[in-house]
Length: 119
Image 1 (tube, rainbow, N blue to C red):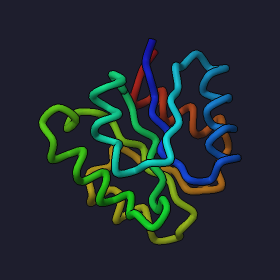
Image 2: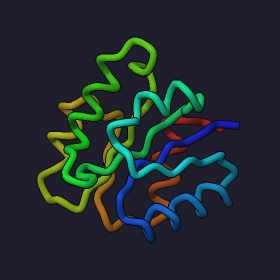
Image 3: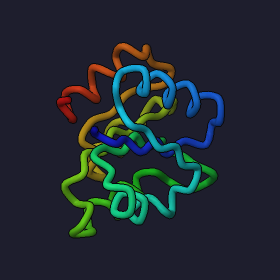
């Protein structure tokens, strides 16, 4: 089963996404520790990262860039998300595979995930 790592500091949103993706057949892990993302990818055999742009003062684009620069994680798809209106371009420049604006419809999120990570 494909395992997805959600890196999100909004507890309620993280739980909601985790449950919806679980219902859609994905194995999901929720993290509020952006600086541990690379280690989580490797340790838990993560196949896709859903990464918030801003998590507890950490810029998600820096986390994404680190994922891309690390040989063991560089090929892992990263779907970034943000409520910031100008975030898309910065996220894509950092190496994000795709981007979704908050708030989003769960069907749109699942469609993007399915494009990046076919079942």
